[in-house]
Length: 373
Image (cartoon, rainbow, N blue to C red; front, side):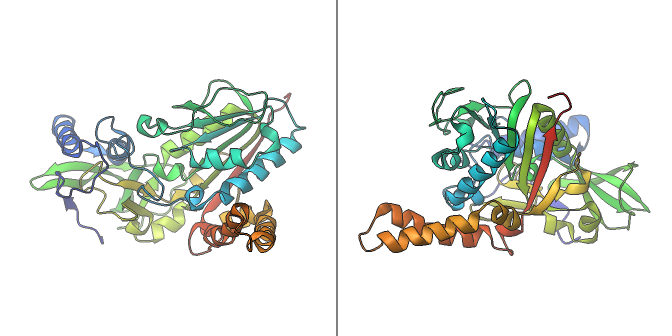
């Protein structure tokens, strides 16, 4: 394997999310392992990202220019403007229902919510925008709002989980599935085995555990690794269950289990911190984001799968860029602020459509239309 098998259990760098109890998390995990035995990899990742005291996200790690990585909403408002068009398209298809609900999961500090609402989608004239963010530290920075407004909403409702009951509308998640805890399997002796996290003399270590026999796994070629994204699959099921009529839309870097098994595992299991690649996943838990490419074949339902670039083009990004170019040309001489904003669409679109970057992300769309609705 290309990454070492043992990493220090205690942090040595000062570049952690503010407020994170990184040393405490490492000590707690070490004590838990010594008491209960090696952790499954998803249990370790769950603690790294969401431990109440020392998890990366619960301690302030986030997307954004002042955060740890840039996602499509942080590029600028154009991404949200295109999504507003898509939302209106779903609303139109459903017959323009009153009370159309947009549920954004993994909303972070509300960047996408602000962009969508600023675009004034028609579906929100008598609608509801719900921003779901698990991290209380990030929820504190979301724009405030109310559950429903009779006019265009200027804010959002803030929740820590999906709202109760079924809604007519859409559930949207941008780069969420890759941040849900995942198991890790390694092929050895002609079978897939659970990879667990133990503690050695010098820190956290990988422990090859029990054999795993599940349907649909690729041939176990010794040395190969694959993720098992049970949490991502469970989230999709829950999201689909919350939509009575409408759609679920997720953007993420994605692949298939067969493809992942054929690639070096440190290509698809990545860490990030401070706008750069982080260290090994077993190094200093809580100090960095831990992500994995999404194996679409392990997700439920039958989503339509396109690239982000193709999705954005289908829903009018080129028209918006052309409009921005015309507004810029008309208002540039006068230094018009609206013209300056319109001009930024050109640079934003280049980043969002980049086939070597964000444009290559997968757009996964599940259409929901329940019988009798």
